Image (cartoon, rainbow, N blue to C red; front, side, top):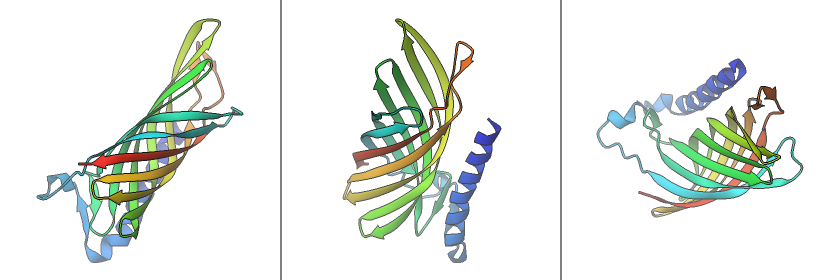
Length: 194
C-alpha cells in the first residue's frame, strides 16, 4: 500500500510538474479553474472496448466499459490542457470476472488541428470474483498505472485509443493471497462531447 501511494504521488507530480514547466514562463497556469468565469467542463462520454493481457494468464481477455471525461477542474493550462478521465471497465472469462473503476488525469498535447496525444497516471479500485465448484469468492484490489492516449475530434464527436499498464495489489480470497492482477490494456473509444 505504501508503494501504491508513493507511485501515485510521483506520477501526479510528474504530470503537474511537466505541465507547469511547459507553461510557467507564459503565466498560463490556472489553479481551481472551475471557480473561474468561463470554465467549460466539456463533458464527454464514450463506450470502451478492447483487449487486456493479464500477467499470469496466457490468453487475452475482452474488456469493455464506459468513460466519462471532463476538463480538469483542479488545475489547467492555457496552451495545452489536462483532462480527467473516469473509466469503468469489466472483463469476464470462465470462472472469473473483474470490474475496475479508474481515475486518470491525462496531459494533452496537440499533434494536429483535431488530434492530440495524452499521457498520465491513474489510480483505481478493482473488484474480482472467482468461481470454484459453484462457489463465488470476491476480493478487491487497489490499482495504479501509467497510460497514453491518442484522440481525434470532429466537432462534438471524438474517437481514440488508450493504452495503459496497470499494477495491482494482491487479491485475497478467504485469507489466501494470490498473484497480482497486473495487466496491459488497449481500448478503443468513440464518444460525444457536450
